[in-house]
Every structure is written in C-alpha cells, then in structure tokens.
Image 1: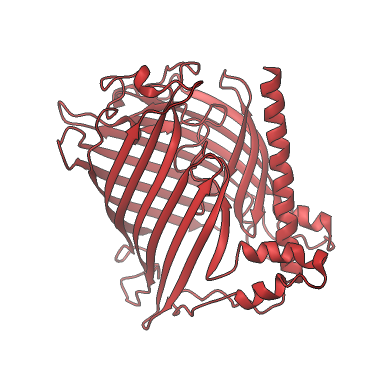
Image 2: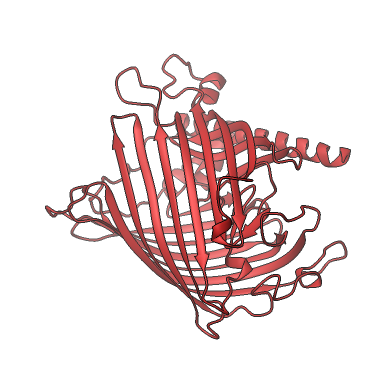
Length: 452
C-alpha cells in the first residue's frame, strides 16, 4: 500500500509539472511568435487554406538563439498546419501517447467551410487510433433560421485498438477486487448531420447513421485475469460473439443563454442499435443530459467571465431490448473516474468502475480561472500562472442498474474533490484533481481533453 501511494503521489507531481511546462511553453510561444499566423475565419465565410510551415521553419531554425527558440519550436511542432504532432490519450487507462494530424481546409463558394482531417495516435500501452474525417459547415441565410447557426455535416471512418480494458462485472454492487481484463477493437464509419430548427433560435436537431464492427476477446499475461476465465455469455452478454451493428440516432439540442449569467444546455436522443447478423443484440436507448450553468462574475468593462461558472448536470440513460435479446456489455454505460469518451463521473472511483444498461448521474461543479483578464499582471511567471491555471471543485453522484425501474436517487454512489485545471485560451485542456468519499480510498484524477 505504501508503494502504491508513493506511485500515486509521484504521478500527481509529474502531472503538475507537465501542466506547468505546457502553460509556460504556450505563453512563451505566444509572446515571442511573429504575427504572421492567419486569423480564424468568421462564421459563414469561405475557409482559406492555411499553412504555418514558414513559421515552423523560422521557429525551429536552431542554428542561432537555441535556448530562446527551443520552446517556440516545440509549440509550433504541435500546432502548425496543415500537419502537426499530437500528444494525448485515447481512452482512460490507455496512457499518454503521440501521433500526427493532417488537416486540409477546402475553399468553396457560398459560405461553405470544408475540412479534410486525418489523425493517427498510439500510446505507451500499445493503444492506437486512426481516423479520417470530412467536415463541412454551410451557412443558412433564410428567414426561418432564427439562430443563424450553420448546417454541419461530419463523415468519418475510425479504427481503434484497446488491448487491455478493465471489467468489474455488471450492476451497481460489484467488488473492486474482482476485476478482470479484456481486449477490444472496434471499427466505425458513418455520417452525422446537425441543423438549426426552423423558426426556433434555441433549438437544433440532428441525426447519425453509422456502422459498428466490434471485436472483443481475452488477454494474456502472467499476472492478468482474463475475462473469459470468470465470465460467460450469460454474465457478460456479447463475450463470445460480436456481430456487426447498425447504429441510428436522432437528437434534439435545446440551448439558451439569457440574462447574461444563465445558460441552459440540454440534449435528448433516441438510438437504435440493430444486430446485422443474428438480431440477438438489437436494442434501443433513450438518453438525456440537462445542464444548468450560472456565471457569477462580471468583467470590469461589461460581460461575464465565461471561464468562471457553477454548473449542475443531470444525465439519464436507459436501454431496452426485446424478449430474448441482450445489450452487449461493451456497449453498456459506465460510471467511475471517466468513461470511454473521457467524460468524468464519480471521480472517487476507478475508471469504468460500474457498468450497466441503465444509468443516472448528478454532477455539480465549480470552475474558476485564477485570473480571467490578468490586467494588473506583468509579463513573467505570475502572469503565466494567472492566465493558464484554474481551480476545480466537484461533487458527483450516480448509479447504474440492470433494470430501469431500479434507477432513482436512493443508494447512489457519491464522491467529491477538487484540484487544478490547465487552460489554453478559453478551453480547459488538462485537469488534475483528487476525489474521495466513495469508500474505496482516495483517487487521483487526471483528465486530458479529448481532441479526437
């Protein structure tokens, strides 16, 4: 236990040092970089192809001023267009990895913004992902488009390999000491469309159709308990066979910002998962997410500080399968640490700690940037810390269930904690926190923004 705690503390310290280095690197690069980078296009305007190679060559010409250019070169290496390197994880437990991304902006008439993007990432634990995506955004200059939002279309193909995943069993009362491992590899390809709703400025709608080709199996290793040694098809549906699936999803997105300080952000979706082979694993899923956000602080010259907010999120998801059908365990919901989409839930527990077809969670979180405008700060370390670091306080409650009738606010697992956040501009790219209250010890939480 002592060695385990020392490793946790060591990992947490390394995370803080990494976050501080990234913040210093970004701040230094922004302060010293020449102003030749093109500005971002305005909404609805055609995208002009961009390239930062000249800037990259200038920053990485290390023949002179090696120390001054080193940080600028590293920053350009990870941000330049059309190609740059990426450093991130793929799913919780995959470890940090690296790869590359190529993005090509396509210029079209009529206010279209088109982009072709290819990404490949591999991690130190031999997880990998490859993705090709075409995205387009087209302005709708019509009287019925009250929100002035654009029509957005994403067409993608993705393949990822997750060689060692953790499974604790199904249901809300599993034992943390009875974990097993399994490997997962899945391929998906599809199209997703989002459009503003006619006549309503606060509503958008969309749909997605994709094909899924999952592949799940056991793992090998001297100190590893493989899933097939403990579980069967009855206790882990989908363990023996994984047929191809067709996933169809429709959704509504009500959203509204009012009185400057209040924001509502809702998502309601209904999905059909169709087993394209035997039909045994066909099921339906209804899911909704309700977020209320309050911005308590105002800027000196008007407007609110968007990075400082208090939010409450309620999420509800239930699955339904016909008689004789089952929901595959690898498509069931999880809570604990972060889920497979890198979304936090019950941060006092390990990743994927609880798994089931039905889920309900409640989260309350307070985020505050140490200094939003930094007007009194001078150039240097204090300004860098002020501009890039923030505080996070969070409370989580949630449960999974094998039947949707068992969902409710009673006997929910709970956790609370806090830590630091690393900002890049207005966005949080990394979080370091400690959570407790779950009855399974103190759990350090590291959240890396999912840029994929």
